[in-house]
Length: 314
Image 1 (tube, rainbow, N blue to C red):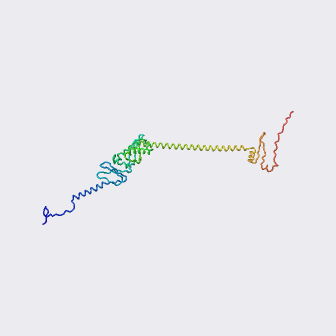
Image 2: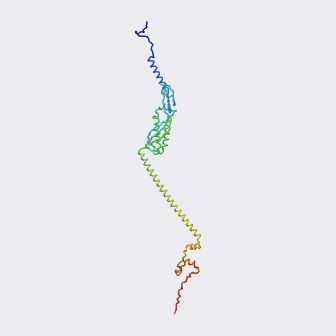
């Protein structure tokens, strides 16, 4: 006789297969929670960054680079970049001579890895807008006020160093390391730019005039030097001629004069000879005739004496 299950005829007792639906759902939820918990229990910190650990909002530690474990749902990690950052900022300020100057500054900085906890606790992760940009504005104004507009251009390294010193004073206590400060551009008012251009033109004209004056002076000095050299040369020639004449006077004698006369004589005797009675003619005898016949020498006849008149008295 078969037993029937209560509740109606035709139903027989059979064993149930598989897990109930509710148990399966609960198991899936547990697995998901475990996966989520495990994923939140680990943190990977990339190179060049630091992880600031917060427990219920309080900074409790700093993670270095690599894999770290933390308590899920209780702690969270704020990643802070400690690599060199570049920031460009423009600021307008008045120079010492009251010229408005717009300066563009490039700042290279980085967060101090040992002070990122205090940086996040006191300032937060938006420290660039909160402290760095205001510090640049203040440092540019302080440095610009120390120089005239002209010196800002001619002494740019000093201006950069002045800005850097102010930034170091303001940012180092807050956990920001200032690496380098560069001034990339100065912009002046149109009036000042025109004044600078006019001054440069005037300086160029003055330099040109000075060069021309120096060249004229050099040419004049060269002319004076040439004149002095020529005068000295003429003086030396005169001295040499005077010395030659002096030496000649020392060696001149009657015999030397007679010798020089004989050397220059052409062998022709003079035709006339002067005397008390006037000019008397002389015979012209060549030197060849005299040398060829030394015996036959012409004699000069004396001139006849004029007759003497005797007065006869009666």
